[in-house]
Structures are given as structure tokens and as C-alpha cells.
Amino acid sequence: MNAPHLDLVTLQKEVFHHVSNNFQIIQSMIRLVSRDPSVIDVASELEQRIQLLSIAHTAQNCFDSAAIHSIETALPNLILGVQRGGFLLGRQIVQDVSCSPLSVQRTYAVLHVLVEVLRVLNRSTARNIVIALSDDELVVSSDAEPIPLNESTIALTAAFARELGTAPTWSDTGLTLKLR
Image 1 (cartoon, rainbow, N blue to C red):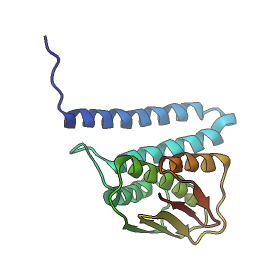
Image 2 (tube, rainbow, N blue to C red):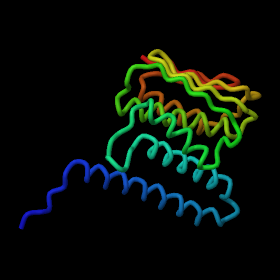
Image 3 (cartoon, rainbow, N blue to C red):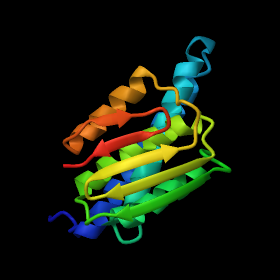
Image 4 (cartoon, rainbow, N blue to C red):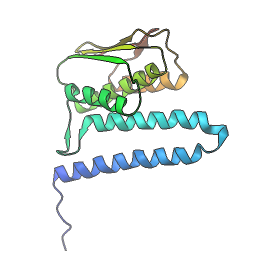
């Protein structure tokens, strides 16, 4: 007996669905662990990071058609998802995308760098945030007081920036990433 034939669109939808479910399962497990008062701060930060990764995953993937969004579509989806997720509420976010189309991998890396920067800006005094993406660089700037960075923020941003073949440069109010 032959196995049922799955077309590529159906397979992509299934993968998207399973990844989304995995994010939800991980968040539920973190909530269970966070009942222990000794790990509540770490668990809360981890849950927030997982939620933002899930938002980035959803921003890049279109469930209905199983398509992968371009950066021009994914970036507004990301901002909308971040705000719907309760981050950066009441803050003005301006997007300026003037770059050539990015590969799926580069779009993924850019979105994940942005998720980390936006997570940091969510904890800052920033009221206005500008995201500018050109062929040469990604610049996220804000009107924040000096933004607080921790080791995980620096390490995660650097890891995703390596996918782009570069290293992030943090300033007091944002981040610059030269694109090669």
C-alpha cells in the first residue's frame, strides 16, 4: 500500500503548524517551571524570548499559502505581531525598507536580530523607533536613554548577525548591522 501523497504546500503548512505548536508547548513548560519563585525572573525572560521567536516565525510564514514572506511583508507583520503580543505598546515604530530582495535565510536572520533589539527597546524609555534596512545595513535607532544590554542579548544578536556574515554594533540608543 502506498503512503498518501503530500504536495509541497501541504507539507509546508504542516511544518509551519508543528513549529507553531512547539513554540506553544515550550511556553507552557516555561510557565509550569516559573511557579518556582527561585526561577521566576529567568523563566519570564525565557518565555518572552520564545514568544518573540514565535512572532518572528509567524511574520515570515504565510499559513494560508505556505509561502515565505519577503522582508517587505515580513517586517510589517513582525511589528504588528510584536504589538499584538503586548510589546512596544504606545510607541511609534517607523519602517524604511529600501533593499533588494533577501533570501529566506537572510530574512530569517534580520527578523531575529530585530526581535532581540525590539525586546531590549521594550524595556527602555524609547517612544520612537526607526528601523531602516538598505542593501548595506540594518539600523535600528530610537530616542531611548542608554539601553540596557545583558550577556544573552549580546550573544543572541551576535549569533543571528553571523548568519548575515557580520557583527552588530550597539549604540546607546540602538543597533547598526553592516550587511555584506
